[in-house]
Image (tube, rainbow, N blue to C red; front, side, top):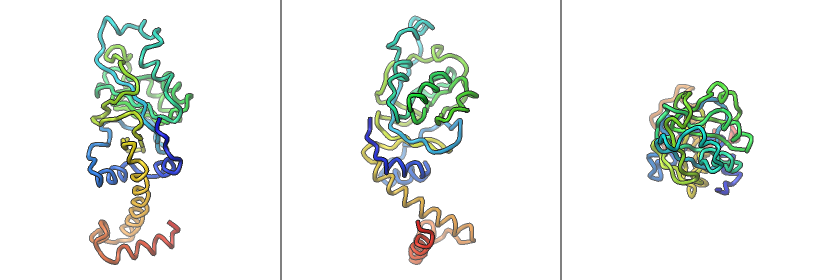
Length: 238
């Protein structure tokens, strides 16, 4: 798994997905916000390297209840082998007509030290999952077992989730708005820029709340804006 620096992790725990998408847009990345999934249990940010599971459409001769007895079943094997600190990301082909997982598997992931779970499909047992401490993102509740629509085929391969390419080791950051996927090799510089952007945006918001116009302030095209920002930053120890 990705060796995510503690300093970088700490920053990513405090910045928004909106700020991160802007920092990535500056680097030419337009499609890095996972479309569809929303957070079931609002709270602190989710940060961790992607560990993936991929589904294809189910097939009746392969996807009976007895398939769960097979220890090589990729869904069950993936859950049991998920590394501590990872985010479990499921490619469900944006199909929420059957569950991607349920409370028992999500609870197991939490006990193994998983940092969160994301699917572009749906979960079953959603009232119970919503009570867990681990962040969980899905598109909508779905009671039917995964076997009715999904056949698990691959663990820790590149996948699509919510229309975004997710490679194993990419850094997933989730807040109460959604989830962004940061390419592994860019994570340190993107986090550093997002930290500074957050400080500036806090300054801008305070100025706007006090009645300031956004013209010349955001973006800071007025020559005096950055001087005012520097003074504000010093006064607020930011």
